[in-house]
Length: 225
Image (cartoon, rainbow, N blue to C red; front, top):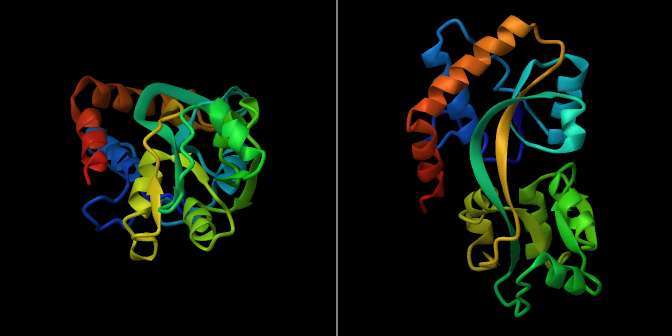
């Protein structure tokens, strides 16, 4: 499945930037023609994808942040696909500028932070004592709530939000603060029902990608304006 509302991962297949996770899947098929990943035309929210992976309804997902809770449910392949940083989106007239999670926690007492439903970023906020609301199904929906004045800040991943803020509906209304709160990496995950031989074959293709400069080039491509 492709994750809905996450254009940095899965965008239109024919576009110049079809999504980093889609590109990784396609690259692996080129490296090993015996690998074929189907189902990427089906979009679903992250919570449904995780449940489908756990139930054995899908075999592989590109790409997922690493957490102890998820490691109890899925197997992570060791090659990191791309790096993200946690950032804060605010309306252009916002004057508050938290420089750390501690400062964000202080501000959240009067203005809770919005985060996407099912995102593990909520775990980061909870650990730091940041008051937050999981009231939007996607980052795009969260930004719409922010633009409409129904929230004061959206906590998300830099690459995801940068792509969305290029949309006309957000132009001149929302900006990202410069502070980068946390660095994390995305990985390929497989369900525990997948035969070991298949997992090893996927891991071998990933290892071959890692040995080249292609992943670095991919990250640079999506970080460009």
